[in-house]
Length: 227
Image 1: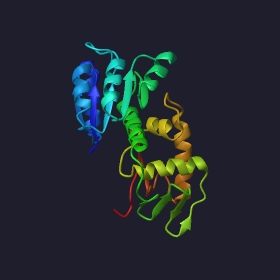
Image 2: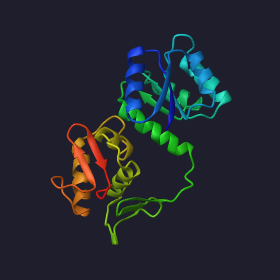
Image 3: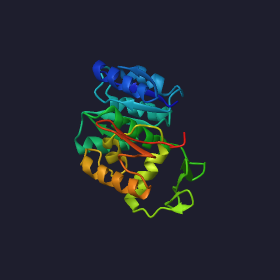
Image 4: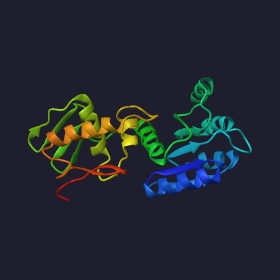
């Protein structure tokens, strides 16, 4: 279970994010001050830190520098500050990612996964399988049983992301952010069209799904049909 430290002074935001992340399977601890956050962040107990900048005791940018001086823990800065010079300064100070409020817990979770993937070198196999469906992340090849799938680059990226997160309900907003690299939103229709193409190539339909299941207003989940 991924351990997350959330440093955020707004109690409503802090509790809301902590609750949603916990529902998604994260272990979350929270604090509302920079100095307590720094002490916890460098303890070695957390896999990733989410850091607000507008904190009541010490500015989050200074807290970031304190953490980075003592630890290499990945840090995602989450703040309302959206001016480019500030963003550049924060990245130069050691942030691994930067999110501008408002954002959803699902979007934050997607950024956490991306930061953790970059921080942890992949020592396992590049081939991921769910049921008879397999994707090779290195060769960009996909197979269903003994049949090779003829996918476009974007279709492969979408399928690979779903396979990597098999069993997890993924929002279309997250797919747009992680697959299409549109963190500030985009057209859900883009996702729908590509899902339709993928289903056709997997020999299924939205009415009779096998691997790709959708829930209106919630998201998409890839499952093993034999499970």
